[in-house]
Amino acid sequence: MKQLFKAVALTVAFVGAPVLAADTAEVGKPAPAFTLKDEAGKTHSLADYKGKVVVLEWANSECPFVKRHYEAKTMQTTQKGFDAKKVVWLTVDSTASHDAKFAADWKKKEGFTQPVLVDTDGKVGKSYAAKTTPHMYVIDGQGVVRYAGAIDDDPRGKGAKTNYVKTAVDAVLNGQQVPTATSEPYGCSVKYKS
Image (cartoon, rainbow, N blue to C red; front, side, top):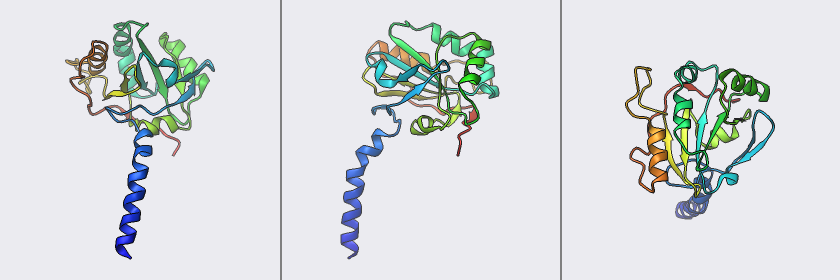
């Protein structure tokens, strides 16, 4: 009886594995699909950007780490270094207490142009396993996750030596392997609903 149970469990695990892999963000595997509305009510789906490099930035404007990066223009400078015809930058806010108006007010205050996708229920954030704000992902034109982790190697704000996102996007655009495909993200924990 034990062997029968083991065989059934292994079969279920084997059959279920591809579905689980498709539902989580993992470097080298297809990125989880999503559709979210931005602060202006416009819908964005990952599938809309096929053929382009997509940078996902998890953010919470109340987080001191996010504030520091926006005050220091880390995000804005990184974003401006890319060809907008080839690279799409989407900011995602999975904070349970934030809504479209909150996102719109932050965007206006900071004066940036990228959409802020509102993920109040946290489903997309959890599917990407976004842990911190900021937490960054780079997805190539075929929809494969090529980088996951921190924006840079500067958690204390003393001056970054390596901007992981810029390095990853440049590598993807040049058809090269991303030198650092993962790093430990730093910042505030994502304030999920539950």
